[in-house]
Image 1 (tube, one colour):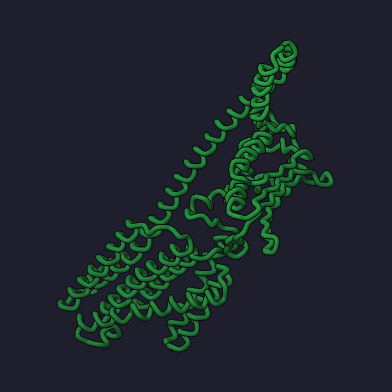
Image 2 (cartoon, rainbow, N blue to C red):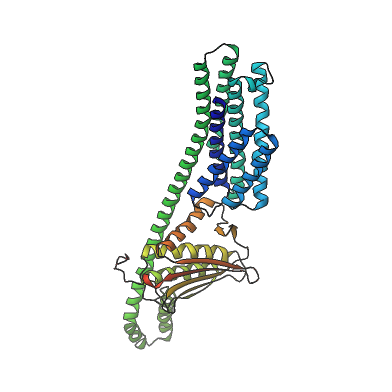
Length: 441
C-alpha cells in the first residue's frame, strides 16, 4: 500500500510535467479545462496499467497515450506527437539507469529497490528529478528554437535546485542505508524527498509564469508608449490641418496679392512659396470619422517615405461606432504588419478598404504584397519578427478587439500573386453613435 501511494504521487508529478511540457511547446485549440482533464485521465490509465507490472504492456500504453495527448489534445502533427512521445519515454528510461546504479552502490544490493522501501523511494524520486531536469532543458531548447529567443541565464541557474535536491535525497538514502532507522523516520525521509520533487516543478512553473507576466508588462508599457507617440503624431497632423484650413481661408488674399504684383520675377517667387505650402498638405478628409482620417493620413505619409503604393478607400463606411482607442490599435497593428511585409517585397503595395455590405455588416479588408508566406502554427498566425513575444502580443490585442465587437476575423495568402489579405466583418448591431471623446454610447 505504501508503494502504491508513492507510485500514485509519482504519476501526479508526471501529469504536471507532461502538461507543462505540451502546453509550452504546442498550440492547442482546446480549452484549458479540457487539456487538464485529458492529461489527468491519461495519467490515471497509465498508473493502473503500471500496477499490472507487465513491461511490454506498460511500454505500449505509454507510447499510445502520450501520442494521443500530443496529437488530439495539443493539436501536434502525428509525426511530431510520436517523436515527443519517444523522447519522453527514452529520457525516462535513461534517467532510471543512474538512479538504479546509485541505489546498488548505496545499499550494496542490485535488487534493493524491490526489497527496501527507502531504496525504492530513492530510485523513484531521484530518477524523476533527473527526468524533470532533462525534459525541462529539452523543452527550453525546442521553445527557443520555435521563438528564436535568447536563452535566459537565470533559468539555467535555477537548475541548481534539482541538482541540490538530488544530492539531498542521496544523503538521506545514505543515512538510511547505513543505519537502522524506525518506520517513522523512514516515512519522514520519503515525505521530504517527495516534497522536494514537487517543489522543483512548482518553482519552475512559478518562475515561468512570473517571467511571462513580466514580459507582458514590458510589452504593455511599450504599447502604451507607442500609443502616446501616435497621439502626438495625430496632434501634429491635426495642427497641420488647422494651418491648411487657415491657408484655404486666406487664399483669396493671396490671389489678390498676386494680382497687384507688377514684377514677373516677384510673382513667380510668391507663387513658388504658395505651391510649396500646398505640396505639404497631408490631411485626407475622406470620411466623417476624424480618427480614421488621421490613421489613413499617417500611413499615406509612412508609405510615401518607404516607397510603398498605398490605396485607401474608406468612403462607404466610417466605423464611427468603434472606440477611438480600439480603432487606432486595431488598424495601426494591422497596417504596421502590412507595411513591414510590403516593404520587403517587390512592387510594394497596400490596399485598405472600409465598406458596408448589404446593411448587415461593415467590413475592413487590408491587402498587401508579401514575398514570404506567413508563419503559422496550425491555423494560428504567428509573427515572423525576432522578438516573438513582443510582436505576437499585437496580434492577440487585435483578436481581443475583434471579439469585443463580435466581429469575424480571417486571413488568407495567395502564393501565386504573393498577396496577403486580412478580412474583418463587424455586425450591424454595433452601428451606434459615439460621444466626442470616442467612447461608445
